[in-house]
Length: 430
Image (tube, rainbow, N blue to C red; front, top):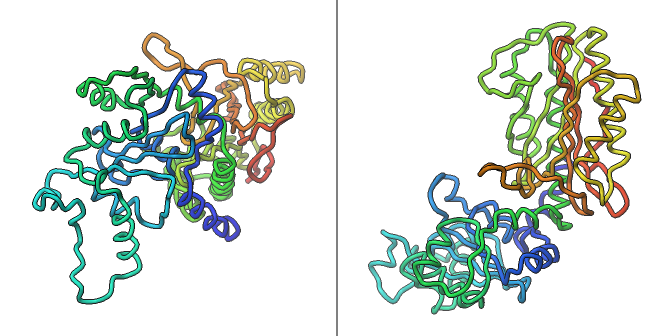
């Protein structure tokens, strides 16, 4: 655990200097879709672009975004940021010196700026009684560096329009990820083309930059360790909710934030079901580090399992090993499923396993979708180098004495795949 946490400083420092987005991939995807740039407001996409998660968004669920990142295809590596003066001072400025980001700042109803026209940065004035602290000085310096012509917009819409003009996007073909962006563009009679870009941004997110790969490896290792730690406490009489609480604590010890722990096919946080001696069950845990997700599952034997459950666990583990050996660029999701099914049949198992490949990153299932009657459906994607992939291998059969499942996170390389966390046996015996 100490080794994990010792790597965090470098990752924090990297995110203060740059966003995690793979810019070469972004240019390729924007060119493929004929986009001149992107205007992003969803917090996950702002973070992907700038390495900055708008903190206030965590308290305003369901409300339109108020922080935006702008990117142009012609000037990759130069970013636009639209945020309020308050949030620029209190969140963005802390720890950052970003010459590659141009800010456009606006006031909010109730800001002190509304009381002092012509003074764009009135918050927290220096009383001069004692020297400013290092934090106060850094924030003041950051504000002082903002171009006055970009620092005193009366509302977010005006700031966003001016940012698009300043970034050279006002007449182009621009992708957006939130309807409020399209509404602002329409209200200001945008002369270009506005293109819904949620799927486009997910295409970019498929291929991880080196920084993203490092963040994923850090998240995956802590997540796997937390699942193993929770598994080692499993005993007859332990309740599902207790294992879930333990997983949350073990993830937190390692710097991760828990998302869920599925215990024996049960993901409800309210489950009070108890484990039993002789039971076979799986633990499937997901947690994230700086918003990048780990995903890891293993089968547990509590005591001596029935032969049917043991066979099911063997089938799941065998299938996953067969798939791992075949993962490489050019392979389709559907072909991954076929590899698993063939491995099970050829080994003489009759076990039914639901093979589920999915990209992992800033979400547990982090790939573009296709329209299915207005609903999202996972497409039959082709693997590319730089993807981080999980393949769920849960046993679907009931009446076998429990459940079985295993999965790891694999980085697709130029000629194969490699696990991004420490290796573990597919079955844990308690």
